[in-house]
Length: 228
Ligand code: DC
Image 1: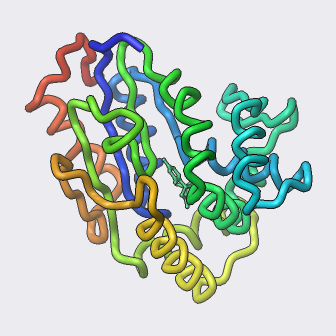
Image 2: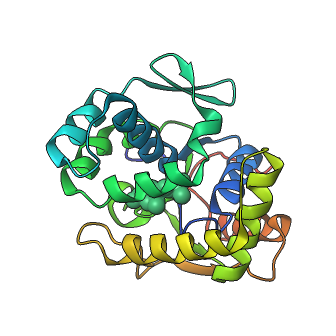
């Protein structure tokens, strides 16, 4: 990765809308986009498919080093199969959160995430983009929203995809997942000291995207990335 490649790190809890915002910011800037949660989700799917126990740290890490995943044509492929829909299931997210608490698994996925950093720039989203994976990011955002707003957003997303959803279960799962992601020993979910806090509870996606683009314009990324 070129030291000069500009990176924007957008971290935050599940269903905060950070993925949508990060994807749109990347599109506007003409930069690459990394959905790091998708990598954890694919690895969890791979472990379940191969019968590797989610608590087997060395086994899941080994799978992570050899993960055959491809992001292309707006889809995600695991071992050549389109897993885009399975990836978004709640059980996949919960399994991802479990393996993400294992230090060797996080280490195994580091190089794969850093490989996304390429010219003209990268917008990455996850939990530890600003703190661990891309600490050199020129802009770090901690994007959040109230648990209720996030449960409602996740509910709408799942229903729109034709997947099963129940709002009370979603709220409970989301709070459990937040607690696990925030309390783990390695790369816990919390804002970096130098992150800008963005609470989108009462904001539309477009407003959040404009907020980030405005910060990019004010700070300058040191690259030729233009907002189009
Ligand atoms: O953002 P998401 O819901 O798709 O992420 C799924 C799980 O993966 C989440 O519960 C925590 C984990 N994760 C992580 O630990 N670090 C990241 N950079 C991204 C996701």
